[in-house]
Length: 332
Image 1 (cartoon, one colour):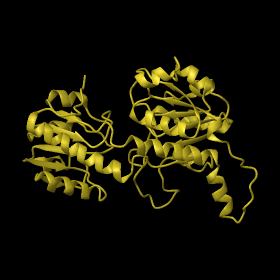
Image 2 (image 1 turned 90 degrees about the horizontal axis):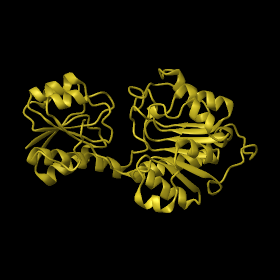
Image 3 (image 1 turned 45 degrees about the vertical axis):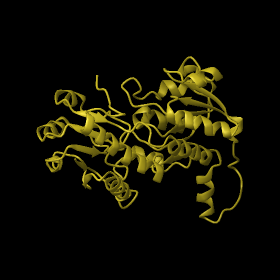
Image 4 (image 1 turned 60 degrees about the vertical axis):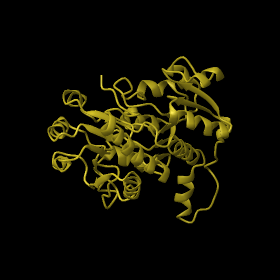
């Protein structure tokens, strides 16, 4: 059995090597992403393990199939960048890692909210200039707020547990209700009702056509004045232009954005200077003291990285051996 692993970062390499040694399976490590320029390196391999924000295009998937590589295991959750028609046309089996560390993302989300509520950016900026005064940035306590959690999958539920630890009231919305949370009576019947009640909106929904720009001008208008927006999920969930307008008006008191709708090719890149970042809307957000922008790092812990790598390799091994795996993605 031979597996090729594309886009392996330095922080992932030890976990690939550990798995390869434990399983006694050859894994070729490739630093480059899976593209038209690199796909031919998969010749002679039984499966491919991959991770990238760029699209898995039809031309790449067609070529993989031509090379006889029809077992593709993603090291992440999202499959919206996979060409579904090419997958079905070539009978390629695709797996993902649906939960590599919900706690990592939930912990980061609540950390960013606490930074917003305690105005840490404002204090740090003033202190850098020698100003150690308190006013005017008096804080708000999380235990006094209602947090509206949108989507109660693994990450949403992990976030709820932490919010409750701070004493916050929780309301939640999801098309699919979790049975335990259902018993607790925290679900509301509509997003409008959640917007009406919540002081904080915590987004944990997937990127689907239906969810595209779910937080837009209309949604912001239905929220409380001074609401906080947290998005560690997918950039496309928030209309950036409408968010900027809501921040300008004060409707939104602050936002923590670990994702951005145009992040591909920008996040995880060193541009050398702030001015060189090629996105004016993103720079607009980054300049604001009440907006925390991070480059899609909520997942980035040792636990999560190891799980992403080794769960994906396990999935690929299962596909190669049996044609089945624990986390096969169905493309309808």
